[in-house]
Length: 534
Image 1: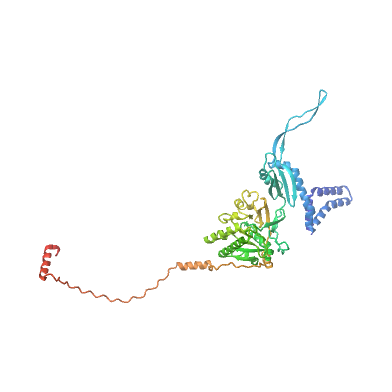
Image 2: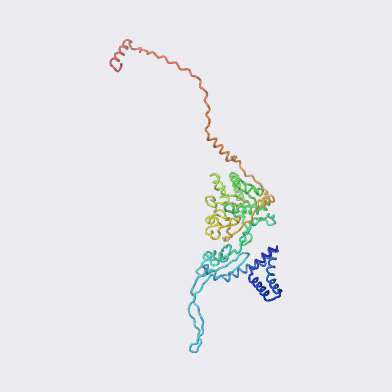
């Protein structure tokens, strides 16, 4: 306690050096000039008493100290700094322009006994954009600036990084109010450095709405609520960036509505179910194989068709109620389904998912998908998601893929710290960009939430797929198939009896010829051929 009070007094002394040093010098002079040390002790007590009171207040009641003393004092100093340094600040940041202004100077001169007034020349001066107002809220200093003549709000946006650096701000964001007025919000203190653990969701009260859920905090330390109903959400981040915090923030936040049958969660986790199976009781069904995932998507598409026929001509936006809930499809690692599966599975899954994304929003079927690689080759239907969340990414190009063109400089998701998982950049409804951080969901809290709010409806969408063989079994079968098959010996043939030679046939004479003439004719023919016959 004594150490904490000493640190608190030291912080107060650093913030008020004139007070502390002034009274310390007075106490030193009193000790040197007066032999009685009472005066010096009084001065030292007066110098140390305010800091000691502040240190005790900060130690015992930190929330009240920040609300009533530290916060207002800090914001007053920010406002005073902005107003006093605005002309020099705009000049150094390249927002002011130097112009020749015609000035009238007045002088008294006696000429011919009369008093005359004379005006002369022109003067050069710096013309800055007008600082309309200076606003503070929480840890944010907002400068409302109106452009000068010949300037646009794009010029003010380009100078926002320089203004943030001059103010020692940790981050900034801009918002255009009119074609000539821009709000530059400077976040002066880092409110997202510490990790905040999520809490067990409270049961639903009389307000049975599932429009938004609170996931964490914004960079100005205000709560961050994510729109769920009527939105398809794509969460993109490299490995270890905190996609699990986003996934369980949504599923855990909807857990009371799941128990009331206002929401039904459908899980697809092709990473062997490692993530989703942690809170299995929250889900109506969980698919862990590509075949089961296809069946789940087909079942949700059937829900869309049934609701479409029921809502035609009645309503254009589904309103969740018990028994007719909002269906949320939760996909962990979307690329395993749409890019890394076999060709038939990829084609069918992409077709079904595209139909759900294009038709399901108004019919009460929304999608929450997590992925690491945002390229079109991996997530071909990236443009069908209505809101995106950029966790820590690998490059400025990926930031533009997720948040849109021109966002890499204003929302550098590729520069988020690996030491702060769950930090992300989002696009607001008005098009502005903001930095947020989701609360952390430990495994024990996930299991407790699933046990407290189990789903009322369970559906089995698993298909009878052939058993999956292990890699070593497949290799063994391949080796066996590649081995030469031994040939079966043929049975011995029976010994064949050699065929007897045929008896030559005797030539029979013609019936109409004389035997003697035939013999003489053969002889005469042989004699005619000569030596060839021989």
